[in-house]
Structures are given as structure tokens and as C-alpha cells.
Length: 226
Image 1 (tube, one colour):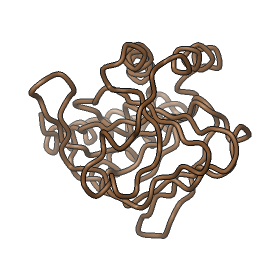
Image 2 (tube, rainbow, N blue to C red):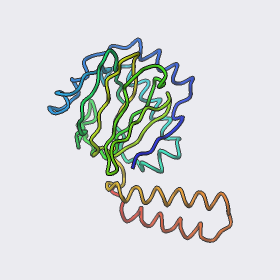
Image 3 (cartoon, helix red, strand yellow):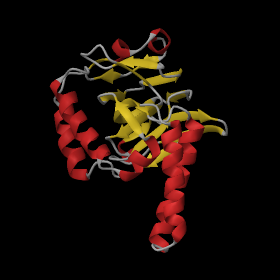
Image 4 (cartoon, rainbow, N blue to C red):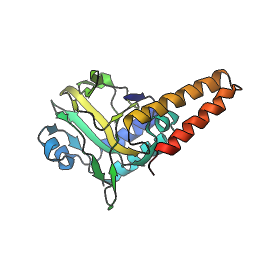
């Protein structure tokens, strides 16, 4: 399930965040890659413990906590602190799959990476190339969203970032552990939630709203891992 989440951040938030990120220290992105990823990764990142990463990351997490579409689609249990990368001058990231377990920086805690998130800070008109290519059952999907928009996709997916041939691609990337481990079950719950909201909007007094809401929560109760 690939879901584009629009307007996670406002244009004003994007502009302020970019000033902070532009002034931060950038290092070789391979420092956070595993053995497989380091062989195909060519980009720059801000160290996870850098004050700029923490400041902008907290803004992202606060915005996501208030985003109904994200909460419905992800059903998040734990979210890793957002990180930030930049691609320019032909930099790219070859085909890889994200690691299944990641440690929360500065803590002994680890989370399972069920979903990957990429939030765009540069608009598609600012750079050429840099498409996020995500492979799923129906083939590869190309993702290049406006600034402030985010793509949510299964961390089990093979994916890559094509070379950036003009300008700079600036994004935040991070992972989360969902209350629902299985992507198929998570997709069913999301579809049901969307349907319930549609019925409730069009026919608020329809008795099916309460009944379907009960089914949704009983499935969530049965499948959730806490």
C-alpha cells in the first residue's frame, strides 16, 4: 500500500525548516547505511543527533500526530526520529531494501520497521531526476511529490532514488512500527476507515456507521500488537 499524504507541512514551515537544514552540518550518507546499502548509496545526510535534525524532526512528528490520513493509514505505535538527506550532482541511491530493525538513536530501544516515510522539502521543479522508485506487485512506481507532501510505503519494498542531474533533492526519511504488522490487514483497516468516514459524512444518522465502526475496532483489537 502506497499512500501519498499531502500538505503534512505548510509552505511557511517548509521555508523555515530549509533555512535550518541549509545551515546544518552535512556528512556522507553512508554512515547510516548497512552493508548492502553502503555499496549503492551516494548522498549527504545530517547526523541524527544534530540539533537541526532534532528541531525539524520534532516539527514533523507534531504535524503527523495531527494528520488524520497519516494516523489512519499508518496506525503508528513507534516512530523513529526523522532524518534528512540531500542529493545533488548526480548522486543517487541504488536498489535496496530497508533494514528490518533499527535502533532509536541515543537509546537502547529498537523498533521494527513496518513502514517507510519520505517527506519532500524541495519541489519537483527545483531538481531533475531524484525520483523515488518503489517496486510492488504491480511494478515500479515513480514518486516525486511537492514540497510538504509525504509518501508512506511498506518498508519491505525494494526501492531506489534515481540520479539528480540538476538542482538538489532535499527530503526527510524515517521509519515507523505500526500497531498492525501485516500490510494486508493494515490496508483492510484503512479502506474500512475511509468507507466509514464517507458514510458518516454523507448520511450521518445511518445505523450502519455505528455497526461498521464496531467491526473496525474489534478487528483492530484482535490484530493490534502493543
